[in-house]
Image 1: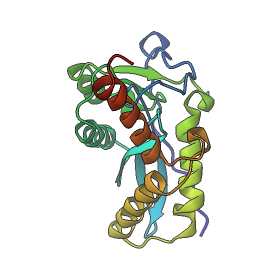
Image 2 (image 1 turned 30 degrees about the vertical axis):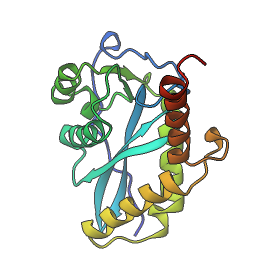
Image 3 (image 1 turned 60 degrees about the vertical axis):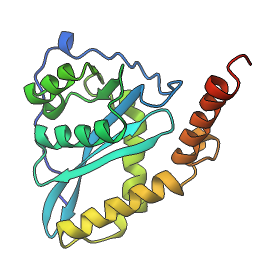
Amino acid sequence: MPTVKPKYVKSFTEDVDCLNLLQKKFAPSAPNQVWVSDITYVRVGGQFRYVCAILDLFARKLIACNFASRPTAKLVVDAFNSAYYERGMPKGLLFHSDRGSQYTSREFRKLMDSLDVVQSFSAKAHPYDNAVIESFFRYLKQDELNRKSFNSDKELSMSLFEYENFYNCQRPHSFNDGLTPNEMENKFYNIEYFFRFLCPAY
């Protein structure tokens, strides 16, 4: 049975409220400066499940990958909270997404305001404004989701968990000069530690 692409609820938020602050600057100088996010879908037992992923742009690291039976604001809130507390509640964060109703919802924007997170949005019908997460989803489907049939949420959950470990710990990334996302972050923190603590007068 062919998969029919589900329809997403589009946001009607005015352009003035959805500024593109990232402007395709996909190479921040440190972790936890810019996160990007989007939602895709996968069939589980004949029904759709919606997967929300969040990447840290610095090392292209996958820092959240949640799914739900409906693409609601709660899905992106839960994914963001998972990443935010796992990453030590970073300050000065820019969060970029498309203009989907989940990201422009009052619930999600209230969360962003409460944490002093600045939101950035892709322009309408411009997927290249969020090219990094689009590329990640292509590899997620190619490497994992399209190669398997899922009969339960438990199977999907295990698959996403295993892929996150593979992607962050084992998969070399061309943007990182062949290092995995974890290796790239570890390299950054080791260098930062050297200059800040071991050799402050260097």
